[in-house]
Amino acid sequence: MKESLNRDQFRLYQLIWKRFIASQMAAAKYETTSVKIDSDKYRFTASSSKVVFQGYLNVYQTDEDKVDKKTLSKNIVKGAAMKVDNLEKKQHFTQPPAHFTEASLVKTLEELGIGRPSTYAPTISTIINRHYVAKEQKQLYVTELGEVVNSIMKKSFPSIVDVNFTAAWRDCWTVLRMAP
Image 1 (cartoon, rainbow, N blue to C red):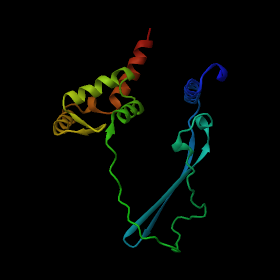
Image 2: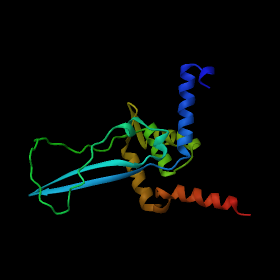
Image 3: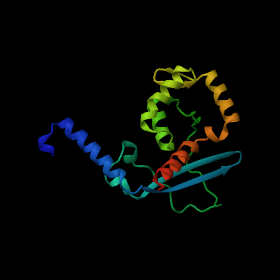
């Protein structure tokens, strides 16, 4: 195949092929270790994870998957006293989650099983046109009107506004279509 395609075409073909094959494979499995260290009035947390089953990662890895993460020692015992050898005085503030972009919103909708690909663009256009969100420099910001409408919808229609509603309805519809 490589001989009959130019470089860009082959790279696109390879990307599509790898993603398709990966989508048919088992998920990767990770072993996560998390340690919480209490000291007077402070709590320190450290965590790490390592791949224990490659699954689809054998075929398709993103740059994030390729990053070699540090692992924690296996000799850590619950309740054990620890001695500090070195302490760097750094303060880190947790950052709020980033605002959605159209792309990240579509990705989240896909992950949650909400809607179908054909409904994503009209949905985003509608929430922008109705001023529920404002788009500034590719970022989507909830407007005051959006907050009010969301609050009313959650209070008046909790079962419909539930994140699992669309996914559950889609599953129900699939069963109904398959019935004789």
